[in-house]
Image 1 (tube, rainbow, N blue to C red):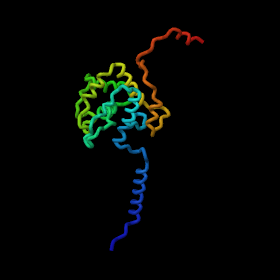
Image 2 (cartoon, rainbow, N blue to C red):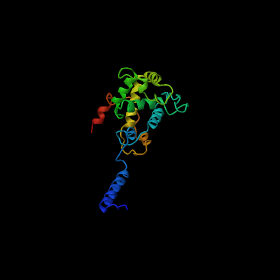
Image 3 (cartoon, rainbow, N blue to C red):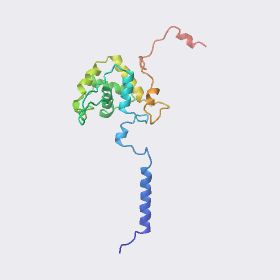
Image 4 (cartoon, rainbow, N blue to C red):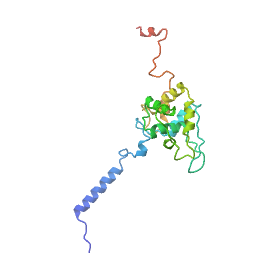
Length: 202
């Protein structure tokens, strides 16, 4: 004849079940590593493919370089573009912040061969594409002139910079709130123009 559980044991089991249920239903308290990699400093999620699409809309002359075959399907992976690989290398491989121009410049320096060494086995697409796109991507980015590189750096930093009023669940709003990159960067002050002194007069 089996003994029935004591009332104290039943209370403890019930309390433990309640606490587990409470913890499981509190969204935002626990973030998995995979999710954390896609959350920039602003706290809202930006998918790499969505950012890459915005870049190509702003810079239509950039090559997509998305004709590589996937290892699993053997078909062309059209979403695996030059820009998406550039972002993944910066963010996922090098773990650099996405909101600062300086860090994007460091990544460009890698592609130009004047900073850290890049290897095919630590480059986006190595485990998913039949052929490593590293050398081809480096050639494309090395072909950009200094101003084109600066414009791309500015645009990426603006996309990932937290925007006031941006919806946490709608990455498309980043495109509407992000200012377009200017030719003159903040660290390059503009020269005064004739008549500017008149603006200081009461």
